[in-house]
Length: 471
Image 1 (cartoon, rainbow, N blue to C red):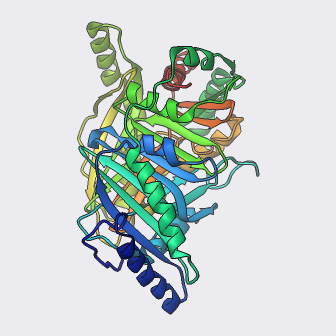
Image 2 (image 1 turned 90 degrees about the horizontal axis):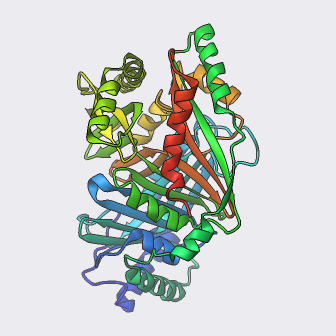
Image 3 (image 1 turned 120 degrees about the vertical axis):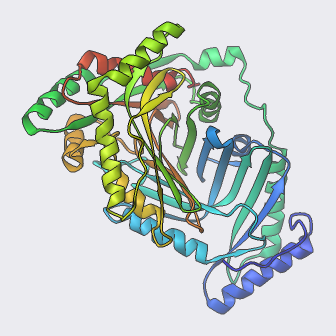
């Protein structure tokens, strides 16, 4: 990525801004291909979700992720370049696309700034069951605007596609106007009145998927076909008289569940996939890989004593420990195939969330420079935590038992930068928002000894994550 440093704020110096874009345009002419001008600027703290609320439009791709553990939130709005694809090579195609984007970047900022990122969403299956899928099996894009907030600092990155015939004056006028709107987007704008919220929260709930029957059938399949584990999802459809307020719902999620990743991605057609996920599939920073096994669940207790009792039962449950160990073993095996030496604690600990607790095992490894994050992602997805074991057969069984399209549910969502840093979460505890309609997803792992009533209670508990926040 070539760097043409500027000591001034290009958004305030139109002459310098024009000169930088002119250099990019000249490179475009000389090389006979589009160049991407990239400008980073540190600004007074803004709320990326408020920015998303203020400047995103339904016809744009967007991505939002908030990581409370790192006190970081980031919004990506609009697409300078994008790829939508499907099939078994989708992760490989995504890797080639991101590398091409980064190779065409021309930066006006020194390397101590946050880097531009490509944002990715993958569906659970590499090929949809129907031709009318809401989201593509893989969507990757380099955003026009990347707005991030970490601790007390915010950074705005502008990426612009520059062609031989680009009207630079018009581009500068447009982006400076949008930049001012970004700087004005502050915290505290998400305050629906109680009267409006009361009206919004009157829905028709359609629970047409018989989850208990599916679990009972899956248990028979486990016995007959020797499946180790099968993860079944449950989907509930909700219809409202008023359009769902997806950004306000997202704000509620981050307030109610501050111990989860809050996320949203839009397909550019007015449909949005949002959620609050506790599960990070991979996080890579300076070649250090962190992943985790998160499987085996129990509710939280209403009192300290009840909560401790439920936690002890979870830690000592042979059924839950077995379900968890299947995931640990799978991740260890997949990482070992790359020649990695994963560091894994001997016993799991508890990950306690607002309304549920899980068995949790953190896993770490050091990556060689040649190993691309999307290669690891392709090998790990789907883990037994969201599919089952053996994996291929479990995925076939999921298709057989689930009468709805998973789409982005339980699939990888995240970002990658030019230095190989990346973060991908698993899109669980999630909802597809489409105007007056919302589809809510949650799942449970089925193993020998599972009880259909208890599994239904578990998915209902997980669905409360969304029902409490949706407006």
